[in-house]
Image (cartoon, rainbow, N blue to C red; front, side, top):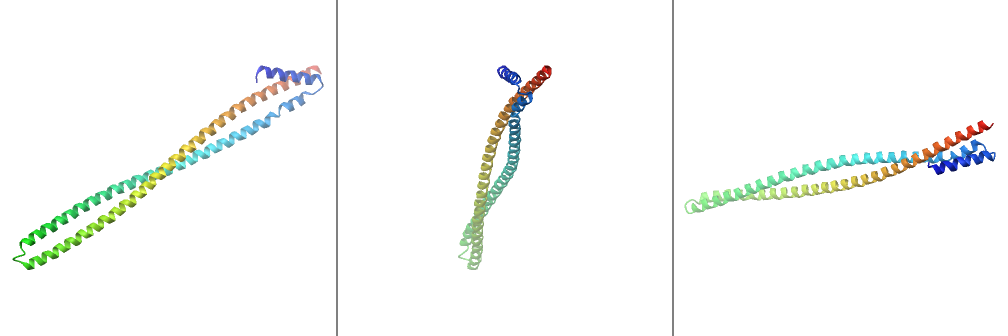
Length: 213
């Protein structure tokens, strides 16, 4: 409390004493600010509880973010593995085609002399064609798996972005709450000083009454 307020309070006390009003009545009037201090303290407790709740939410979201990141890494590894399998299947397919072409060329050279061998080799060629078809079906299936994994990966990335945005919003709220706590603490300090000044004036007034009895 500044000097001007102290002078006003002291003067009010002297006037009240001079007019027959007791020191107790003055103290009771000044003590009305105590209710305001209790309200501010309750507000500070409420804000502190909210900050704790927000911090707990951040921890939960960070755990979810860690899980989503781990899942994204797992899906990425699966994509790499599937791509390697597809590459190997393509190599196998090309080898099968080469084998088929070589078999056709070999048997065409012998067709004039050995028709039976031609028939046998045609069967071999058909088997190779079946193998190629099977490989093509496998490649198609792997491509579908790759597409599914890529979709799951994209979903995890989207979840990660959403969780990151939520954490940023919670941090902003905590900053606002901390500012409110700081403002209320400053106000509480001012009211505590005012209360101390009122108490000192009350004691001084009571001492003056005792001295004048």
